[in-house]
Each structure stands twice: as C-alpha cells, then as structure tokens.
Amino acid sequence: MAHEKNHDYHILQPSPWPLMGAASAFVMLFGAVHWMSPEASGTPFIFLIGLIGVLYVMWSWWGDTIKENKVGDHTPVVRIGLRYGFIMFIMSEVMFFAAWFWAFFKNALYPMWTYQGTEYVKPEIIPIDAFHLPLINTLILLCSGAAVTWAHHALVHGNIRKDLVAGLAIGIGLGAFFTVFQAYEYYELFVHEGYTFGGDFFYGSFFMATGFHGFHVIIGTIFLTICLVRAMKGDFTPDDHIGFEAAAWYWHFVDVVWLFLFVVVYIWGQ
Image: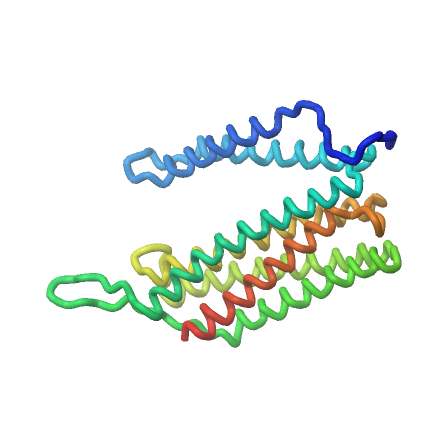
C-alpha cells in the first residue's frame, strides 16, 4: 500500500545491507586471491562463501528497493537521483573497459617487447576471423538491443503490456544465445587454435576484455529477466519504470562495448 509523503526525498530506515554487502565482497575477494595463489591449497571454499553472501545481499537489497517503490518512496525527485546514480555506475564501467582497450592499443601500436636470451621478441597478435561467429554475435546483440528498445517504447508511448513482455523475452533469448555462442567460440579457440589463458600478452588482454564483456552480458540477461517477471506481474507504468530503464541502459552499454570490441579486437587486430 502506498503512503502519503510530505517531502520529495529518500529517507530510509536503517538497513543491514550496506555493511553485509561490504563484508561479503571482502570475503569473496580474499577467497578469490587465496584460491588463485600458488602457495594456497587452491580450494574455492572461502570465495564461494563470499559469493553466496553477495548474492543474498543483492537479492534482499533489490527486493527492498522494489518494496520502497510500491509504497511510494520513489518520488520524481528520488527517481532523478536513482538515474544519476546509475549513470555514474555505467561511467565507472566505461573506465573499466577503457583500461583493456588501452592495453590492447598500447601493445599493438608500441609493443612492450620481452627480452629472451640475446634477442627481443615482439608479442604476437593472433588474428581471429571476425566475419564468422563474432559477426553473428554482433548481429545477435544488436537485435537484442532493438527488442529491448521496442519493449521500452511499448511501455512509454502506449503502455502495451503484451509488447513490453514480448520485447523483453526476445531480448533475453538473444542474450542467452550470445552467451552460448561465445562459450562455443572459446571452446574452438582452446581446442583447435591452441589458445591459453596465460603465457602471452595477447591471450591475456583478449580473454580479459571479451570474457568480462561476456560476464556483463550474463548480468544484463539476469537484469532483463527480473524486469520480465515484474512486467508479467503488472509492475512498471509509463511514468514509473526506473528499474526497467536502468536495465535498458545497461543492456545498450553492453551492446556498445561489444561493437568496440568487435571493431578493435576482431577486425583491427588482424
């Protein structure tokens, strides 16, 4: 039930989620370092404990946010603040990927050669055929972004619930196809092309850039799936759909990053 407010601001009750989230993230990071350390036992137990804590905090905190919206706490002023906050989050993600693009450009334009014996050996850039599976994945993500835009247009300009649900479902399905095809591409590179996760600068930058992008695709697919469930339950109106708006922004960000990866790593990298 919505309640009347005599102000436009976001005044919340004390919450345990920020402290629990920070503690769980620390445990997860510590566990990941311990897991990858050559001196450690190599068990992911601590990492998994932290991951479970992070997932629990995310589920609970976002659930509270949805409840706050339903009771009327997300006033127009609050929604502006939420939009600004999410824009700043996407800007931080832009800088994250800029680091990997910079590493790739730096190695390609001004190589950091490694010294082996009495001669310098230039790190090798191994070309990948861009116009087969990478091109298919590019078209899949572009079509998925178009489907999400269709869903947003249906909500804002017509409040057509059927088109909103259909657009989200298509976008989610295409996002899942992208993940499957990228996993198959990695399989082909490992099994038939001799790629490895380490031992060469190109391998490291390639898998960090494309792998983290694939991870963002999985997150975005989950984000859109939650929006689909909410849309089927009757949530979101033309004037109040900040959760879906954030998911759409995130998905378009993922699309744009992939276009840069496709042009730089797959085409220009040849």
